[in-house]
Image (tube, rainbow, N blue to C red):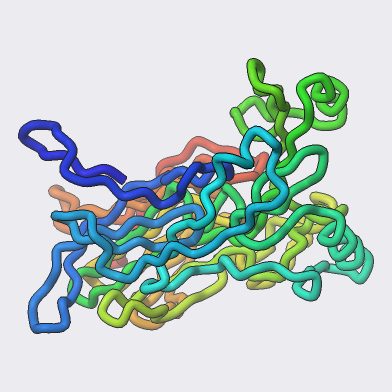
Length: 356
């Protein structure tokens, strides 16, 4: 993250959240400018940055110095390809003074399945894959588990802020990714077993480098994440105490199911979500990036769902709110084009307001 002087364009300060990034842990979303208590009756003008690592970095807006403690902690060094080994950073910055959301270290005992069969397979795969904890280097000819995955943690939806109550609202993704490198000569044969989706995601020959690359969401043989739910949440963080105020699963599995077959069961398992939240001065948080095609409103103080509306398809957009100059009423507007990872798409713009 870089701060520039608005009048000259010159760099004022910079802060690095990952050293020598091997994991696609770029910063995908804009930070939030907020004021936080200084403990002396005043405030500090701060900047809050969310990351794919599920870390929240709280920095002084003027200097880039951490307000909440950041510690350089040791990370795994084994398993990298030979060319990377000399360049690995022995430590990485962890924002220990802020909550980390959904980035727990995986174990075999935490492997999950809808059935005994896929849980067993996930436990076997966990033993076969390379995983030494968060930020395990990506290996050669062997799948490496990345937790959090490069989908997030927090992705491009960023966050919304309830300024009077000093609350921040975020949605997260809790499905690990698996990565693998293979010699370039082996990639054409490997590519016969996988198919890039044309969006720039997934496998790549990485021409001009020694290795081809494969990456995908880590799922069981029946298409369900190998980790226990929730697979995504909506979380409120109290910036006064720097703790989680509330957390709820991000929607239901109503439109999903094993082997790609919709189960039509509204189980509140929490799903991976994109887009972002919108907070209003009336004490509501709106969000529509669910896999189950709903726009929902939550009580900003408690996380209780107070309203929902079934959209024609899912939405990967952040709601916006505005006062209509014609009616003087507040509207909530959302672009509805399809949920992330869903083949069902649409082309709608929908607006909502309170009844008279």
